[in-house]
Each structure stands twice: as C-alpha cells, then as structure tokens.
Length: 351
Figure 1: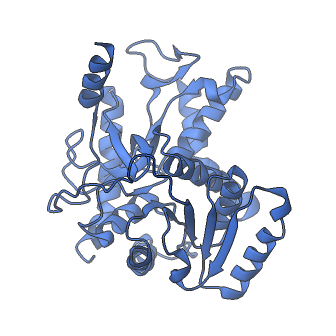
Figure 2 (figure 1 turned 90 degrees about the horizontal axis):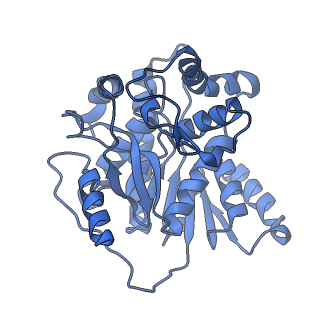
C-alpha cells in the first residue's frame, strides 16, 4: 500500500525528460540487460583547466575503468595523460587514454564536454555564442559516431544554451535526457556551502536546497524549499531578507571573483562534473539540479534548457521534478527562461 502510494506520488510530482523540440519524436531508452555491468568508460572532450580538473576528480573517485582524453593540442594532451599515468601507483587501476582523434572515445558510457572558447575583451556575446555553437556542431556527431549509446554531460559555457545546441545536433534519435548540462548543480553547492558556514559551520550535507534556472546571472534560489536539518529557513509565505539575497549575489559573483584572482575556474566545476558523472556511471538516481528542456513547464513555450531538480542515473536525466515554487520564484524562473531564449533564438534555427 505504501509502495503504491509513493509510486503514485512520484508520477504526480515528476515527469519524463522533455525532447529538445516539440517536433522531435519520442524515443525509447535502451537499457542494459538485468545484472549487466559493462566496463565503465568516461571520455572528456576538451582538456583545458576544467577538463583536467574533471579527469583528476574522476580518477580519485574510481568509478571509471577507463578515462579517455580528447583535445586539439596533441602535445599538451600527451603531457597531461603522461602526468596522470605516472601517479598510477597511488590510485585504483584506471586506464588513461589520450588522442586528438575521437576514435579513442569509442564505447564510452559517459562523455563529458568541457570544450569551448572564452570571451575576448570587446567581443560580443552573440559572436562568442556562434563560435561555441560551431564547436558543439563539430563535437557531438563525432561522439555519437564512436559511442552511439553514450550519455553526454555538457559543462561548456554558456551551459544551458550549449546543452540545447548539443541536444538539437544530436537529433531525434537521441532519447530526451541523454544529453544534459551541469547547470546549477555547482551554484546550488555554492549556496549550501555558504548557508552551512553561516549556520555556525553546519555540515553542508545537512543543508538541502536548490538554485534553478540559468547557470548564470538570472539563476533563481528556491528559498521556500531550503532546509537545514529538515527545518525550513523561511516561514510559510515569508520572503528572503537581505542577508539571504546577499548570499545569492555572492553565488552569482563567485566565479567572476575566482577568475579575477587566479584567471580561471576549474576545481569546483571539475568536482561537480565528477559527482554528476558518478550518478550516471553507478545509476545512483541522485536528485540534483541539472540543465534539461523545460518547455511546457510553468507556461514556458520555447525550446529552453534550464536547471530543475532531476533524478540522474544511467542514461542521464530520468525524471524532472515538479518543484513547488512561490509566485516570486516562478516569476524569476520565467524571467530566466526569457533571458536565455533571447540569446538562443538568434542561433536556434541555424542548427
């Protein structure tokens, strides 16, 4: 009786992942046979600071049997791979492969894309977007040529638009949810860390809450759902005060602050990508805010990808959670969708 009730609740409060376009046909997901545990291989496309931080984090959590690295800079790539291999005495046996040819990624279970170009001084956002769209159009067909059943995690920026582009390039034969973005998983981690520190160093694992929407300036903290030790930080109907709003501002500005101080960000997003990757490789079913198509939710009509809490496991996003929002939070989420679509629509029909 209890099990049936929980199953009914699951169906009411969540939904299957949404295709990248309303024109895309429904595709069923191919699942491994019961008891089948294939050799788990992860490929990382783009081995700059973020790619290598992701590789290092995955190497230390030992969830993959093989890690394949792909980058256009063959000389640097070989140096990175050699450096990782020389530490093999100090971690579980993981095979490290590296090549500029995508053939090295063959039979990957998970592919993490970190490749992209950074914005130059004075460069327009649209010009940067067009460059990164071109990069994604080059990467995704090669990924599926060698690993047609792979799950693809996008960590390239701008994350939400790049995830939408990757899904559209992947096409209707790729099941909804198999291509998804790291989204606001990192933003939410940053917020929970700040809250834990503010609550007299409460363990972050005891703080629950999400930032949703854009991985960027228009992200939305869902204060109405934040709990510390199961206790809501706001009373019902209460709006966040300036202290909480300042925490969210710190989250939004944190990447820029790190870049200002060291020139780039890498460790936090690397750890985030590895954490999401583990959920996929081990089919954990973790609920985390990742970027997926939100068309049809909260009145959104466009093919926008934003972060909402999702159940993530083998095959990527398995269910999208219908998170209850206050009117203020819903309005902010819709505004975030509007901001993303204003940029995305300029390139969407060209893909």
